[in-house]
Image (cartoon, rainbow, N blue to C red):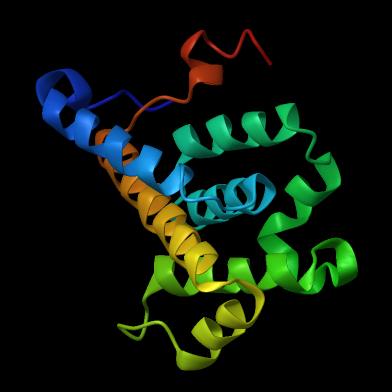
Length: 156
């Protein structure tokens, strides 16, 4: 297990306050909670953020998400009808915003999401994607230890 580099939230509490404010604004925007959790898990997988994966997989299970869907999320494109077209559009947008390999979100990816989400929902979706990416980047940089491992894995 890695050792945390710092407790950034104690060192710079204004960052935590700002992040919580942004997360609350993104969460209050009215995005379907199932889609929101899938987005958080998928971005965290891409960013290899164990802390956020631990948190959001646990939350998804608590909210009734199936283990099969969680297990196959990283291969959603190959999972047939396990994910709805709306969820697949959200996941494609999540990957495009998270990776930014070409420096922009491709028009076809954005259009696919826009076809499944009304403008306010699309704004909420983008807010969730940007928020989880910010959390991931903080936690990966400081090597935040997943809560389930903080006690030596005793809760597993």
